[in-house]
Every structure is written in C-alpha cells, then in structure tokens.
Image 1 (cartoon, rainbow, N blue to C red):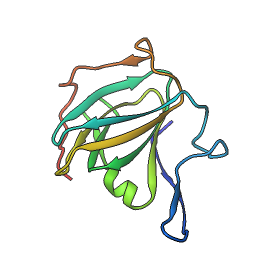
Image 2 (image 1 turned 45 degrees about the vertical axis):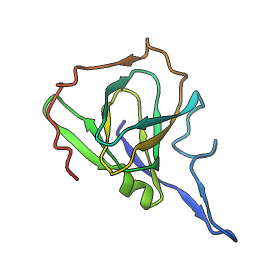
Image 3 (image 1 turned 135 degrees about the vertical axis):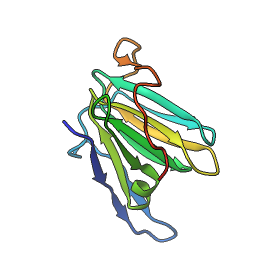
Image 4 (image 1 turned 120 degrees about the vertical axis):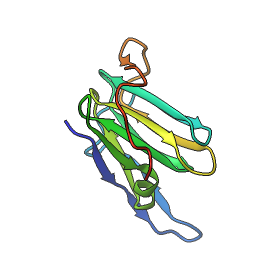
Length: 138
C-alpha cells in the first residue's frame, strides 16, 4: 500500500467551522489504537521510523512540517504537511513505510497521529538517521 492524502470534511458553522478529521466510516480508518501529539522545536527532525503493524493518520495542529517518505535506500519523497492541512487534508501512512518529519517553520510543531495500534517498541523499527539523504527545503 502507498501513502495517501485524505481530503477532510469542513463544515461551516456560526462562529467558526468544524473540520472532521476521521470517523469509523472513513475509508482510511481501520481501527483505533491511540491518538497522540508530537511536539518538535523549530528545526528538529524526528525519525526514521518504520511501523511494522500500526498505520498512521497524520495532521498538523500547529506549525509547519516537512515529511519524508522513503521508498528505497536512494529515493525519498517530500510532502509539506502544512500545505496538506491548509487544503483540509491529512496524510495516511500504512505500516511498512519508513518516514521522518521535521519542524520547518518559525514556531514549534505539533503533529497529531491517530494510530491504528497502541505503541509497542516491538512493532517499530528505527533505521539509522543517515539511512539516506533528503533535501528538506520546500
């Protein structure tokens, strides 16, 4: 399976709108494991991670993020999660994909991960940080 940008449902409401992130009826929903928020100071990188069982559903709460998805030892795809959020989207990452993200804005980053499994150190692999070279510019 490949990563997928998921379009979210925005509902206008008096005094401010509602952005529906995920429901049990969403095509990207498989099961609930846990929801957590990662905070990264400006310029900090978090990765590399490869979840062997858990799918991730990521969206930016605050700040700007660049995420890199590794498709081979020499190929890297960049997705600007800030643009994804602005266009009312989230990013679904199936298990088995190596990824990392970086806070690239002027403030700290808060990114949410709706994970399909509860965290277990037995289901996550952490390739070396020099796994490959990525261009972090957006």
